Image 1 (spheres, rainbow, N blue to C red):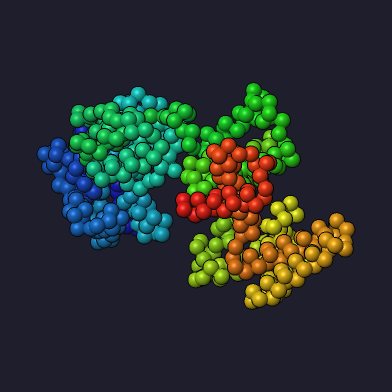
Image 2: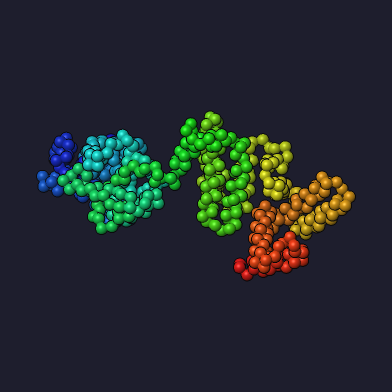
Length: 489
C-alpha cells in the first residue's frame, strides 16, 4: 500500500525539535517535502544538507487555501504511488490546524493511502506556558480564518490561530467588537516558544493596526466577566433561574403558568403599540418583555421537571426546518402561495389523524376579532367563502339591518348576538382586503385617543370646561383636532 510519512516540526527553533524527528529528517534519503519553508527550523536544517521541496509557490497560484491543500495532497499521493518514499513535514503538530493532514487521513479512510504520523510538539504547549494559563479551566482553539462570534464561549480561555495578515485580524476584531468594548484587552502572540517569541497586549480596536503579522501569529482572549455578557442568551437564562431560585425574588418564585397568562398578552400588545409608533427603542424593550414571559414559563417548566427552554428552542428549530423543505431540503417552491400550501400539508401530517371539523384547532382564548379571522380562514380552505367582495358588503348591510330591528324587538343577549354578527361580517370583509381587523381597531383606538387629548388641550387653553359644552361645540374641536393631525402627518 502507498505510504506517506508525516512529521511535525514543532513550534520553535531546532533546539525544540525532538531528537527522533531530527534524525528521521537528517537520515532521509531523497527529497523532504514541506508544506512551507516559513518556519524557524528550516534554515538550520538546510544548512545541515537537508533538501526540501516546498509547496509555498502554490499559495500564489491558487485563490483559495482549500485548493492549495488539495493540490499538495494530490502531488504527495502521485509521488508515493510512483514508488518514492514520501516524507512530508508540517509546522507544529500534524494534528493541530493542519488541513492537508485531514485530507490525507480522508484518503486513508477510502483505502487509497497509508498515513504514518509522528508528531512534533504543538505550539499550544509553549503558548500556555508563555501566557501562564491552565487549559483545564476551559479552553477554545479557533481558526481565525473561519469562525463566527456565535461559536465562541467567552467564559473560557480562547486562542485564535492563523492570524497571519491584516485582513484576518480585521475580521477577528470586527466579530469580537460585536460582543466586547473597543478597549477590551487582547494579546498578540508571535512565535510562541522560540527565541523570537513576542507577546503584546493591545486594545481590541487596535488589533489590525501597525503590527507585523505572520503565520506564527496567534491572538489570545482571556475569559470575560459575566457583567460584560448580559446580551448573551445564557446570561438571561442564569438571571431567570436565579430569580426563581431559593435566594431569588418572592414574586418570581410565586408565579405559575396560570398566574402569568395575562402578562404575555399584555406585553405582546405593548410591542404592537411600539411598532405602531415606529419606536425602535420601544420595540427592543417590549420584545424583551415578551421574551421574559417565555423565559419565566420555561423556567417554571424546568423547576417542575416537565420541560426547559432547551425543549422550547429544539421544538421551534426543528419545526422551522421541517416546514421549510424549500430552504433546508430539495423541494422547489417559488411563490408565497405555494409555501402556505406546503406548510398546511406538512402541518396536517404532523398532527396525524384528521380533526372531526375543518375549523377545529382555533384557540378559544384568542381575542374575538382574531378568533373570527382564524375561523374564517379555516372555512375558506374547504371552499366556504365568497370570492368577490360584493356579497360581503351585502352581508354587512344585512347584519346592520337585523341589529337595528333587534334593538327595538329583542332582548339584550339577542341584541348582543346580532351585533356580534356585524363584527363577524366585517372581519370577513377585512380579510378579503388583507386587513388585520385587530390591528385596524387598535389603530383607530390610538387615533381616537390622540384626537381626544388634542381636543382637551385646546379647550383647556381657552379656559373652557368640556362638561359645560354642547356636543356641537365639542364636535368643532374634534374637527380641529383632525385637521391638526393631518397637517402633522
